[in-house]
Amino acid sequence: MKCSGQTRSLGRNIAGIAVLIAGGLLAAPLCCGAPTDPSQIPSIFKPQSTPANSIFHLSLLVLAITGIIFTVVFSLLVYAVAKFRKRGNDDGREPAQVYGSNQVELAWTVIPILIVVVLFLATARVIRSIQDAPKPAGAIEVIAIGHQFWWEFRYPALGVVTANELHVPVSNPSNPTPTFLTLLSVDTDHSFWVPRLAGKTDLIPNRVNHTWIDPQETGLYLGQCAQYCGTQHAKMLLRVYVDSPEEFSRWVQEQRNPAVNDDAVAEGRRIFETTACVNCHAISGTIADGHFGPDLTHLMSRDTIASGAAPNNHENLRAWIQNPDSIKPGSLMPAMQLSAHDLDALTGYLVTLR
Image (tube, rainbow, N blue to C red):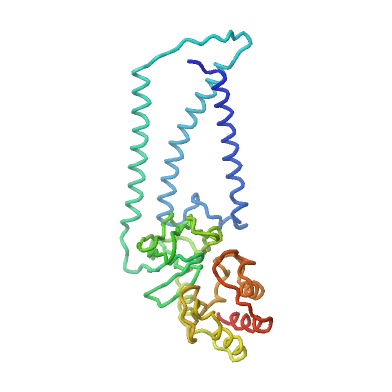
């Protein structure tokens, strides 16, 4: 077998690929705007839900098998590079050729087949356990609808509609309260992914998909659209708030309340109702009943705007209305071209919607 220059070249290529992969993994948290709070890092290696836990253990199995394969192959490569490297007394003659071995041929045919079968069966078992999970009587049902580029969440049994920030109750083993999500899309393909709670499930136009979560610890869990859906795919973020039963009941009650109607901001409400805002947004108690944009009835109860692109405060809200592209280029929300006075009045009205 002739393996001098070719082996060295292959070794350099693999080393280069390893460096690129390591660099990409290290840079990933930086380019994706990872949270500073370690508990909020969307990692599959810190599962807090039954589906995520099943995927985590499957991942460990896959990593163990592929790690063994990598170690064996890399060790043989290092051995070949060291043993068959070009030496100073190399006369350039072709080395002795070795042809065929029934034992070797059988080994590298049977072993990969066994590995694939094991991985297939393990994966099929996890997929079946997640997809066929029974829905208990006390489960929370949510319809999640993907838009370019934001999330709509509807709770049919609770009469609640919100956007981008999903609230669910914690699911204690003694009192399981899972949340079952029906996934829809109104435009293009999206993908619902909260790594610590469940795997990726696509939202596909004209198709109904399902997933479920049963978070076992309260807190904030960050997610992301994991299917390229257009210009602002990277900023189609989502936040899952896992509340205690009491906090969740209180949140539901607050979301059921009608929109605030404050006479002090009547001018801002008039501007909202007489502009194109009503074509895309809905606010209970007003003529606004649009569905192209998020429901704004309780806008200021959310921590972020623009699907997590910016904190929800007066300054950012004003900038968002004035020029959405300044926060989220390509967001499909038009700039309203309001005067400074009307912009201030409209912003003043919206910040009362709690």
